[in-house]
Image (cartoon, rainbow, N blue to C red; front, side, top):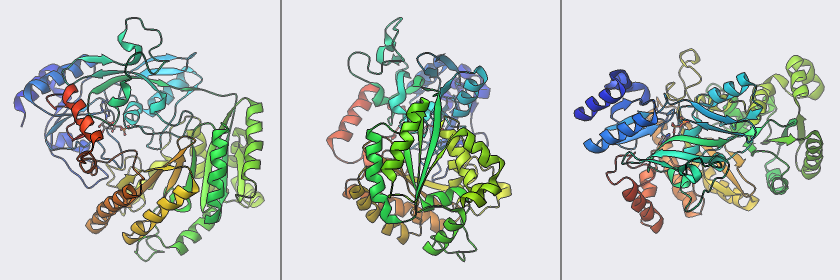
Length: 531
Ligand code: ADP
């Protein structure tokens, strides 16, 4: 398959950077979805010139390419293309941090730069800037997640909002620079998003119009003062008033970065594996067992977490405002400073007795979530992928759900930030989940003041065909039922793109027209967010 092109790729990149055959490419086939594409090859360019060359060769030979940055994209398709016989363009070797501006707080980076790499670099150089880590773990690409319009829990939450300036290789091999980037010597390329004329950056996210080879990303200056805020409700009825209070706090700019509201079950799946024994092998987790586990670990029915930062005076005032706003609506509001966290770490047992909290358990999530809100990447959220994995822990890396054969499929609709909408949405999803044997383990992330990004992982045993089939049907039912009521996902997995893009409406027709204009040969990621 594609032999002449493969020979040309080898000449352009060196044979060692062109992988052919199942053994050489198997790591790109690992996926948390029950999908396995036939791969033609993997090419690993290391410069933008090599990317241009790869695109020209592909164009001349009619070979479809599928670009990835680190190719993790857990729960949405990992590194797998939409169609068989694509050549994966792995941009992992393009991992240069090209520029960091301390004063204006931005970085210019290549696709292969991971969260860990940027964090370590900032630390080693003593640069007082923080990134905005996602829950996907330290070894994921910053640029890849931005192109998927993902979000982090650090300062600047929504990744695409903090993106500024792109370099893109188009389907004909030409380089496009967005914003002011196409003017020689432009001074404001990485500080002003819009440039002059039509704003193009957005069309290169969740699309297949180009290969992005460089991007500016805004970082956050490390603040003078920082504290994390944790709050907890034991009863479902408290959620509505908390949502109203939260919206007001967000509109008043009290929190820095997104606030997360985690359902009890979401915390449980992050902290351990499925209690097969207690459940006698049955799924989903019963309310009884969930309540018992939650009581042991002192987890509320709803658990909130957000960050406060700024000057010491601002943080003090924010704490006071939050206490007032949440008074009578929650069972506990706690603020955690670095000093307090150190005390918890030194005397966990003593503090358990004094505070009545299960401090050792609490620390497992606290330390990591505390760090993440300050820009320290962690794999704390990644552990949820292992919930229903029945393989013995000793055979698992714990850090790569796809290689570890975990079953994870994300459903992530956007819900307006009202109790009415959250209630309507839950009444749609809960019966569907329980019919298919899945827990309602949602997090509501306030990605801005007006909406929640609801992340719902369908977690299944990838070794169990019956569970896999349930996950697939369940996802489709969730998608259809939520769409019917107006709740749409912010991002699609491999299994759901064709269903959306083939819908006959003006939007998807325009998307196709743009594709034809920008990549007439159709060689870039065919099927990805376009028909
Ligand atoms: P991560 O490993 O951080 O989850 P990925 O590298 O898997 O990110 O990227 C997510 C998706 O975004 C990929 O499947 C691919 O379709 C698209 N993508 C990633 N990097 C690029 C890029 N540099 N140019 C174009 N599309 C990309």
